[in-house]
Image (cartoon, rainbow, N blue to C red):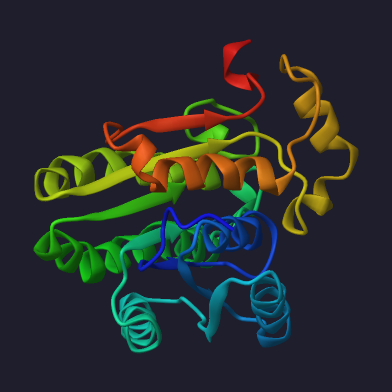
Length: 248
């Protein structure tokens, strides 16, 4: 196990499955004390157990992230468990698809609350403390459809486009105080959440140079890179991790 992030605490939202789970494991492998959040306590306990059995340090915090108050409550719990938060990975997100006219106002509010409002208020709560300490790293998880118009992806894609602009704005705001803010933009990735797309996921991935779907660990590796000191001169970047899908 590496000690690159030893002494630091990392909060990973949506850390019980998919990219979040892989990220929690990757950051724990670098020596971070990982606090992972999610709604399923059983899955959370499984991730924590896997990390601890490998010699890492992790805790699960149950959180249903529905508004600014729930974001603040999660930040408070993460501080209680980890003492302070040095790394924030805004991974929790939802991605309903469908024609614009088929989506309701409730769908709109739910997507923007989970994908934009909650990350905004987590950063508002935690980034100033990182800045006061003179160091920190934030990674937001976006998507290739934030910059590529695709049928059925208007609502989800637009929410993540907001996240990408926030990433750049936060880099400008907090970077001078030592807090690096970046984002990863995954392409088609095989997770529990994307299983509903079936063969469509493979078809989307086949158009890229890599010609295949990513594993969650491949996205997590990019997040871990951006968090670590080796990425010390990278700020406000949106790193595509999409098998080259945006190149064609």
